[in-house]
Length: 89
Image (tube, rainbow, N blue to C red; front, side, top):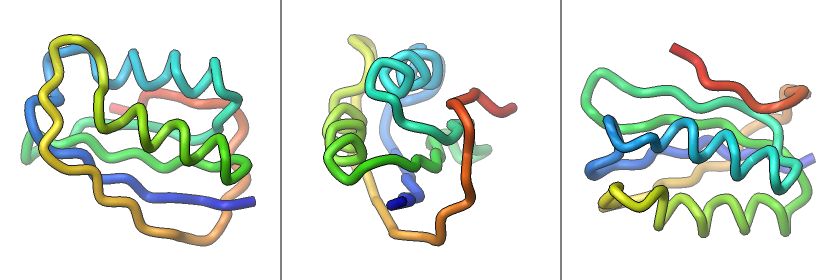
């Protein structure tokens, strides 16, 4: 199953980005996790069918209403077998 590592920059902390991404991932059936990074960015790993990953990556460019996304960098990685989607601290 495809696996992507995502690095999202911009105004993406303090705007419910992680919770909104968790909700979107559950809606789509994408597995993985999301967490804030010390530099103010957001990091996520997602797994699922390619079409679902395309949808979550497209969502990442918008994020929740208050977010201002500058970049979304996606890199392919080895599948890890995530079950569900969680917010990590």
